Image 1 (cartoon, rainbow, N blue to C red):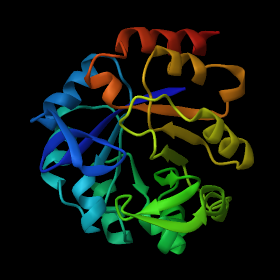
Image 2 (spheres, rainbow, N blue to C red; image 1 turned 45 degrees about the vertical axis):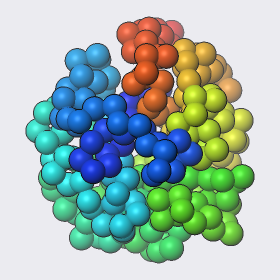
Image 3 (cartoon, rainbow, N blue to C red; image 1 turned 180 degrees about the vertical axis):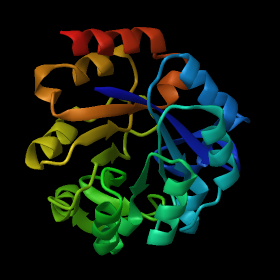
Image 4 (cartoon, rainbow, N blue to C red; image 1 turned 90 degrees about the horizontal axis):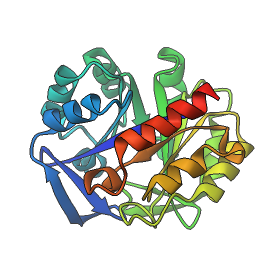
Length: 245
C-alpha cells in the first residue's frame, strides 16, 4: 500500500478544494516546491499532483509549478489535469513525471489511453472521478452518462498502470474514503486501483490495510495532511508495519 500525498495546483499555489469546486479553494502553501520537499522529508515515497486549472482548460496551466517540484524532489511523481493528447503525455514524461493521469480524455477518447499506455508501458494511469457512480469530466464540471466500471473495463488488457478512483461527494470534506465502492471496483477489474477522496484520519489508513482492501495499490491523502488530522509518521509507520507482516 502506497500513501500518496496530494498537491493540487491552482494559480501556481497549493490548494485543496471541496467537492471539486474551484470557488471553494483553500490555499495551503504558496510554494509548491517547498510543499513537495516537506512531503519528501516526512518520508513519503510517491507524490500525487493535479493541475486543477489544466483540468478545466484542457491543457497544462501550472507547468512552471510542476517543474519546480520535479527539481525539488527525487521521489516519483504522478500528474493529472489537462492531459488530453499524446504530445502532452510525452512532454510530461520527458520532463521527469513518472506517470501521467488521463481523466477527461479517458472518457471522451479511450483510444488515446490505449495508445499512450502501449507507447509508455507502466507510465499511464486513468483518473475516474464519480458522482453517484457516474464519471465526471472537465474538472468535474460535467457528469457523463457512463459508470466508473464501464470506463474501467474499456482499459482491461490495455497496459494501464492504475485506476485512480475519486468519490467527488467526499473529496476535500474529510468524510472518510468510500472504500466500499473503491474495493468493489478493484474486485471487478484486473487493473490496480488507488482510493481517493475524503481520507480523514488514521482510521482510513487502517481500513486500507485490512484483508478486504488488499487489492488496492494505495490511497491519496490531501486536506487531512495539510490541516494536521493525519500524522504522517504514524500513517507511514502503520503501512511499513503492514508490508513487513
